[in-house]
Length: 569
Figure 1 (tube, rainbow, N blue to C red):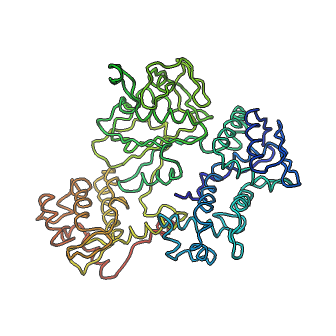
Figure 2: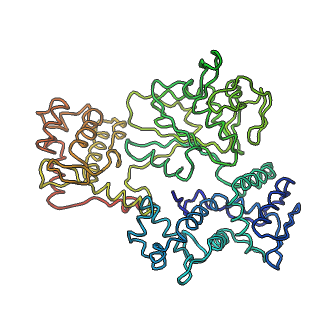
């Protein structure tokens, strides 16, 4: 629910005073801004071409219209901060049962924690409340002032001024400007679009300032790694503050085609039978991105190499080359997508489509070429160990940034406390065995198996074996009921056998069963039955697995904690 105010993707851009452009506002925007200030301040307002005057009580505030540009620079952060302020005003401020907990900072009390959907929201909101001059999460004035609350507008403004340093006598009013705009998202977005249009041709300015927001700098990344390393989770974390309607998720597989991805002509019954173009996920997210050019959109492709990616993209492959503005460098002609974008229907193209339609900021005609806009990013995942997959050719692959997701329980020490706690519980999860006196953690077993896979990879000169390693999240620890009906947290025998052992038998050690497993085991069913009786007695002495596990049991040795692993110590 609550966004992370430390998320680097929403932080305001650094101001370079010498590079701030002149801002000339259109008549339409000036009128809407005037209405906004009159409604908020109830006094004299004059929004001129380059400056603005606002009467506050008996005083006047004068500021240059560059303030509106600065407001755009912190738009993403302001919208995230406003969610906290709005929630406080509507749900917390007048709740007397919470006031005592908040003033005394009893944030672990159930009266406080039960008010939120999850632990993460509770933690984020308590960090927002504490805030203060030295807070990195929410700098600015303290929300609690003695036994009273400060107004959230005051808190909001002081926080924004800590994020955007303005060397001007009227700078205190800047926080109010951003606050008023954030309450009016449509106006904020129109202002964003208008100011961007003014400066987008100034390439030096754009390069210097990485202008406006991440929506103008699309990502095209393939996250790759071993199964269970957390590739999809990485994308989820990167896009967690993006509304669902601004994301489209697809899964490539051997039967997936260009028609599934882009769209196809299908019969439709509507006062008779006619044939219409039904848009696929690519065309739908493309249209949404053009309609809302000021917002970020994401096409997420899971398992990109399980389908024939080159065939699925077809001629759209050419769109993956982007220029400095973020648009596709080259366009392709596709009459069906063009017609769909000009249609009002959001799934099919209309029976009658106007020859010219303005979609967002772009005038679309019947001959407008298809390009990816700068606010549309494409993120994909790829398992490095999958069998029977399609290889990504060099021409396709070079148009992406490739990023390895390391096989670690915790990728970074900068992760949230909730993420750290999840990683710790996953690493220390006990594997259920028939021998109640034996306890091995998932991290211990996983690290031993992966070291043996790496050894086999080196000794057999089969480099692909290294890709068969077990990911830290290959199997997830959870609550389960043991045979004696006791509730436990860890990895149950059933899940371990059917997921982990099956993978080791069918995939990781497919060509060396005799070296790894006991000689009496001849098929997976036999392996599973013996595991239910003897636990890790399924492994051969030659494999060394049992000896290492026994040494861990006798010495109570543990592997690195997730935090140590993340820091590289």
